[in-house]
Each structure stands twice: as structure tokens, then as C-alpha cells.
Length: 304
Image (tube, rainbow, N blue to C red; front, side, top):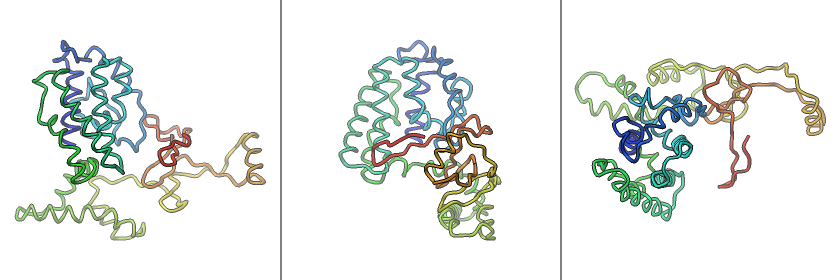
């Protein structure tokens, strides 16, 4: 989180787009308005980022680690290609993206780690020649240790500090007094990290559930009306029982089910803590959670 997204990625974004580097060979400052326009029209799924995309020119100083992460994994390469970033800089940046994506796979082999290590070493080795000696940093050097850290501990997404990004205030609420603050924080964190798994075993009207939600949520979460379909799968919001369907759809249903079944319409589905929305759901316009990719192993079966 700190060495990569708030370190190297933040540094690269600053090198490319800040005015102070506009006369440098690597500068993309002249394309900043074009980049901002592309960022503004992005409608990302909520599962990817909890924050709406913010422009570089107006909001870069307020970008959080998660925004740099989202930029890195999802937005940067398509945008940089679209604005015709010089090939030598783009191919150099792709080394970093490819390596980090490899190291963040849920399942990773020694061969993949070794290949990612090779890419990271080349990225660091070529950095000075493309940018400048003044751009070399401790965070850049730490990239050389990412493969070893993955071998010794786990993938970066497991060992990163993102789980702590939004809970500083919540942890503070678990500490009282000034004595043994370190022990209090350690104990409180242990309780805090255990709560989500324990809550799944409690009923919706449990007093214990309400108490745990009270101490772990600084602000009251919006409670959605839900209807359980199956394990970890819920309809979110109201259900429309009066559905008008076309003759083509009716005929297809009739041939499939030997008659037209009782049809109910809903626009949002909660599955495994991720909300999916219908493309016809008009209340949400700045995000798009209506696409799903079906995979069998590494093969993409379909996208809906």
C-alpha cells in the first residue's frame, strides 16, 4: 500500500502530469485535460472501487491509496494508450503492471514469481535512463524485494495495509485511557478482525449483532430491504410483481418451461457481499455493476 501505490505509482503520476515536469521528456502534462475527461466518464463497478473516480487536475492532492490502486490496475493502461504515451515509456510501465498483477494472483507458482521478479528488476534498472537519477527513490528500490516478500510471506494483496485504511477511527474507539495503549490496540484489533466472521452466525435481530455493528461502524450503514434467494444471495430492494414482457420473450419462456412462469422483476442482487445491478436500473448513473464475466478455469465463457 505505502511503497507501491502511495510510493511508486504516486511518483509516476506526479512525474507524468504535474506542471513542474512539463518540459521533461516523460511529461504528459499537455494531455492532462484529455485524461481528466476520460476519468470523468468512467462508470466502474462498486466491487472494484468504493470511490468514484476523481480528476487528476482538481483532486490529485486528495487521492487516497485505493484511488492510486484503482488507477494502476484498471484505468492507467487504457488511458495511457489512448493519449499515445511514447512507446518506450508505455512498455516500461507495462513491466510494472504485469509484474504486480502476477504477484497478486490468488494462486501463484514459483515460476510466476521468478518471472515477475525479472520484470521488476528490468523496470527498476531502466528507470533512471527513462526518467532521471533524481527520480530514484527508496520505494523504487523496494520493488526489488517484492518477489522475495511474496515467497516468504504471501501475495501483496494479503500482506498490504489496506485492511487498516479506514479503521483508524474505529480502533481508536476501542482504546480507553492512556495506560498500556499498545496492548489495548493489539487486543482491540484482534477482536475487531474476528467480528465479521462471527457476525455471520447471528440472526438479523440479535442484540449482539446490533452491538457489534455499533462498535465497528462509525456511521450508520444504510439498511437495504433484502429477500433471501439462496446461501449468500439476496434480492435487494423492492420486487415488481407486475411485469410486462414481449411476445418474443413469452414464447421463449413457454418453450423452455412448458408455459409462462410467474415472473417477478428486481433490479439489484447481493451475492457474496457484492451488489450487482440491472442495466435498466436508473437510480445509479455514476457506477456500473451490471456486467458479469463467466469463467471456467482461465477460459472466459461469456459476458452478460
